[in-house]
Image (cartoon, rainbow, N blue to C red; front, side, top):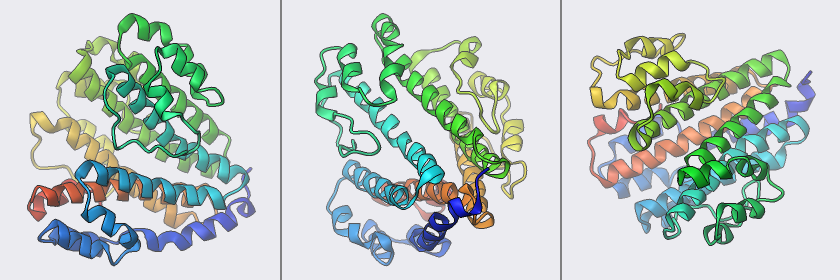
Length: 343
């Protein structure tokens, strides 16, 4: 059982960091900002003020990297102040960034392309050798370079598939399945209340990841809908094989949206465009994730909920900032911008 004492100190420190999160009023000010520079002026009055000079002189790709770096630094700060069970869970939560980093490196290596400036080169949880991976002669060499990480055995099991299919798809999918399996397994070890909170949050994250894979299956791999279930990550919270079959097959999505928003204050959109179904579902999933994260952060001060809730909200905030910055760069009107934010 997880005791109050286990989480008490780290929760107190995490809750003191609440002032880091942007308020609804600040979001409104940024939405209404008349220009990118005016948006940065609003942001300069927040904890992001130290980044303003970098942001105003950078291109969109570099801005994404700056915000990613800040996002990771904030989460690593939580890892540094946590110990025992909270530390293990926080580290595993942050490890997702290593997974995404490794997947990006695999894609760049496979394409033999130039280094992507969005790559976070410093150590996150594991010290991935960026340059060595990008210059590796084959997949087997990459596996050797990953010694000491949980990714080595996972990739080693799927090298034959990569060599046969000539795509990093099986490697990426294997990394996701392994990561979310370990995340879910760790959550099952928590007490009943903490387990319920963690599994709701992680389950929605898994729904989002499955939706991402669905879009990639449809766009890049021309995967038959009959094969979809074998590729889905298990333990999704709101969406299962039946719902994804509907999305994949272009069926009626209204029932899926009703299931997603069940128990929340969200309402269905008046119109559903055929070309935006997956985007609408993704947006609603993020909205539900934000609702669950806020609830966990506010209602459970002596549980893993406050820690996980804050970290999820931090990640959503970073996503919102990227959306805002891109929107202002393209001069989108305020009403269009708000439709894409998770508030």
